[in-house]
Image (cartoon, rainbow, N blue to C red; front, side, top):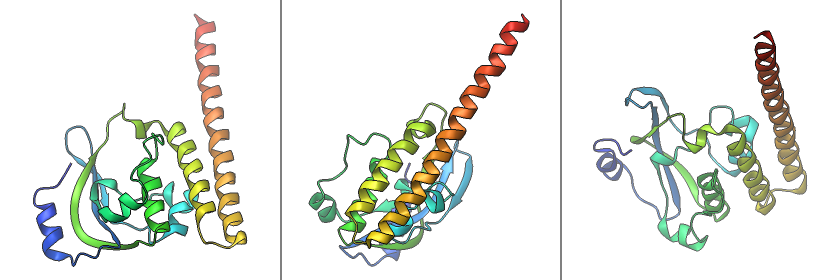
Amino acid sequence: MLCLNGLNRFVRNTKIDSNTLYLGEWATIDEKSVVIKSGENIIQGLEMLVDISGFWRNGASIAQQSAFFPLQAVKKINGLNTDNHYSMDYELWGKLLLEGCKIQNTPVRIGSFRTYPSQKTAKRFHSTISLFKASVKLTNLSKLSFKGKFGINLKNIKYLIGFIYHHLRSKIGIKRRIGRLWKKE
């Protein structure tokens, strides 16, 4: 959702460069439009973007509702990968950074993101697997050294293994608790 006068404040306060990904301040709101949390962008480059446990799953992300990007660069990378249902915007940011776009924060809240239980980003398991796949793809396309790529991919694999372990443990635990309740009746 766009914020009232957010676009006007952005245009008035920003010198536009055709090779820059502009990231404004963001807010997450609930179904009743109450602000749950807000902040500014922390991600400053590709290495931070692809570090899932260090940044992306640690409170830092790029808020798509407050991002402006150069249309020519998006066209050059063939836009969004719509086959990547759960992390298409993440992959877009990565491809723009690989294309040479730089990030510039802008102190303007441009948009708010409404959360609700049935949205696709609430499907944490599927979105994390998708995020991991996109991260590996972006890391391997980057100009990082072999050691740098290996280090990031290894860190993300460790995160993914831990995530899947806790996910399965949670699922099994829930089934056991339900099974015990079922047997008591």
